[in-house]
Amino acid sequence: MQSPLRHGKAALGTTLAGGALAALSQAPERASHLLRRRYPTVAVTGMTGVGKTRLADRLTRRASAQADGPDVGSAVMERRTRRNARLRGYRFRVVPGENAATRLGALDEVFHDEPVDGVLHVVAYGHATPRRTAGTTGSADATRDEQLAAELEDWSITAHRIASMAVRRDRPTWLVIAVTKADLFADDVDAAVRYYSPGSGSPFGDRLDELRALAGGAKLSIDVLPVCAQGAGKRSAMTDKDCTDLLGRLELRMAQLCGHV
Ligand SMILES: Nc1nc2c(ncn2[C@@H]2O[C@H](COP(=O)(O)OP(=O)(O)O)[C@@H](O)[C@H]2O)c(=O)[nH]1
Ligand SMILES: [Mg+2]
Image (tube, rainbow, N blue to C red):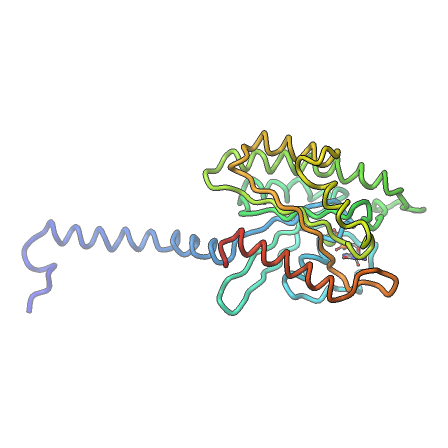
């Protein structure tokens, strides 16, 4: 039996070969498309000490390195991958906080060079763990008002990057504001969520409204979810189960936003 290619029809042969070649050259692209759908990339942003590393570790079921101590901020972009049995997960990119020289490069990477699918912006309602700038000594204490002001400033920079990424692409970008350390303000969680919500009239809410106007409402979805990445302390009004439930809600929402469920 003759193979179709040797059947004399050069044109057919060419078409087949061409088709096979095209398929081959498309293969890496298709593979990366698949990877992107199953393991969407997520930028984890927020000022230093706010709880980004801890949250990313919880979401990826990774034990946090306690040895690092609470006063150490990361100077490099941390990468964490969450895999699950059904080959659906996330690739987290934790952008270093404001004291790191590597911050700008990391912001470029996640919002421009390899733009992420979604953003998890972490805030702590003024409860970021104060960290000293490298090389300085003395108290690193800041009041809650100062912390909230610092969060706002940090957010302005990130928001600007998100806006320019969102306008450049066709598909929508999602943003989840994770209000973490809820165990530290267990009785104020509703007020905290309101403070970080669009349309709330708060300083943070106003900036979110600006971001939505800039990016275009259809191009950016915004969710605000309280979370707690660390077992609640004995004095907290929040139980470990409360914290696990909040984490579960965040995971469910992210899965919905990524089309995993
Ligand atoms: N009470 C409480 N502390 C937290 C929580 N998440 C993080 N922390 C603490 O806050 C500090 C800073 O967290 P880290 O993840 O290193 O912040 P990052 O600089 O944003 O990466 C650490 O001492 C954590 O143990 C939380 O949900 N509740
Ligand atoms: Mg960190």
